[in-house]
Each structure stands twice: as C-alpha cells, then as structure tokens.
Image (cartoon, rainbow, N blue to C red; front, side, top):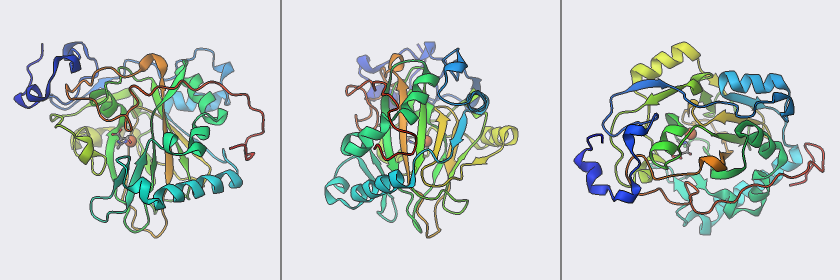
Length: 327
Ligand code: 6CS
Ligand code: FE
C-alpha cells in the first residue's frame, strides 16, 4: 500500500479508499509530476458507419479529442436557452443555493451546477438526440449526466479557468474509474477571441498528466472558483503546448464544443464587455459510474458529481429536423 501523508490519513475512513497501487491514473497524493499514456479508447463504438455524424468528424474527435459543431441549435432555440440562463442567474433563490458559485473577487455568478435538475428546459436539452446520440455512440453505452453547469464568464469580471484535465479531477476527487466520459459545451453567447473562450490542446487526450500535491478536505470549495491543485506543472504543460498547440474554440451561439474528459483545456479571464456564457453537460458511461474517490477524501457533493442520483438517458427519436424549436 502506498505511503499516505498524515494529511490524508486524518481524512480517511476505510470505505472511501480505493487501492492506489492498482490505479493507472494515480495523481496527487504526494506523487511527482509526470505524464502517463492513456489506457482507454477514445471512441468506444467500433462501427463508425453507425455514427450520427460524418465519419470525418468521428475521425477528428478520435485524433484530437475535440470537435466543434456549428449551428446545432437554431436562433429560436438559442433564444430560449439564453432566457433560461438569465432566469437562473437573476434568481435570488438560485443564488442562495450551494449549486451557485460566485467569482472570488467580484461576487458575480461564475457557475451554476446541476442545471439539468434546476431547469426543466435544460433537463430536456441533455436528452436531445443531437447531443445524447453522439455521446451514446462515442461512449458505446447507456449514458447519464455526471455533471452539468452553466459557466457565465460575465463581461468585465469573468475570471479564468486554469489549465486542467477534467478527468484528473473526476478520477481523483469523484472516483471516476476510466476515461469513458465527455463534455458538450453549448455556446449561449458569441465565443470570441476576446472574451475568454475555451482553449484546448488537440491530441492531449492521449496524455494523462500526473499532478503533484495532496487533495485537501473540501477542495471543491476553492477549486471551483480558482483551481490551483490538480493542474499541470509548467514543464509538462509547456511540453504539451509545444507538441499539440493551442486551439481556441471560437463559435456562434448554438454551436457545440465536444471534448474528451482528458483533453487539457482552460480559458482566460474575460475583460471584454461581452459575456461568454456556455452550458456544459458531462456524459458518463453507465459502466463508468463513480467509485470511492481515489484521493481518500469523502465524495464531493451530489450537485457536482452524480453518485446516487443516476438517471440513464433513454434514446429519443429525431422527430423534428435539427434546429427546430423542439426544446
Ligand atoms: O471540478 C470540476 O468538476 C470542474 N472543474 C473544472 C475546472 N472543469 C470541470 C468541472 O467543471
Ligand atoms: Fe474543465
């Protein structure tokens, strides 16, 4: 059994502990920084002709871990989604809930989590075939929402999300066993070069960056405002940028950025007057549901990582044409 720092011991209760020695994606817990090769497929379905998208899109996702789809939702649908985003942001009841995360300095709303439970419209959207069918194909399994959130990135004061792999956090702090999950980010406002768009390293999904440090108790109370742990060290980040380059995800409202759970990504602060508000839905394979956190801390709250509240998304027929206001 790996030596544990005293800090972790004080937090451990045995039913939380996964065996770290058997973990190919062990990170933090006093380890030194490094990169290990991905040990999971990217596209789990074998017959790409059954994909809901052109094979060249599937090939691009396989090779880079990133796919930007333009004009997925119509202007009428986007307008409905934007109105719902403003309703959640402006609601005192929502702001007082733990799902609402504010910016550390300005107090502006930074994110609202578990929006697929807080909003009937977003509950509809996560099951929309234009999103769920693609997730189901890539993950080749039943799917459910591991996490949903609305990142507002308001104008003038929206702060950055430092470089990270979502999977490193979801593995270490949530106990997600394997890389069989993906995010879909739906642009509700223009994603411009100037307003803190998502930046991704295309191809980095094949490198798992082992991070240093030890996960403190209740880390999420800080990391969701400013992530300083579970982030790559400068040396390995520089090497990955040199190898893969940086792709900035520019897109109109209604476009969708699909990215693998292990793609290295981040976004700069937004000092422009233009908000960069995106919905994020994380689809996890039903066979990949969460186990005990690998950091030997108590699990993060249900609104950040679905552990008990698992609803498999049933396939729906595509009754209406893409872009219709079926939502
Ligand atoms: O900790 C998490 O689950 C969240 N943190 C970031 C920076 N991206 C993924 C997720 O929203
Ligand atoms: Fe992220």
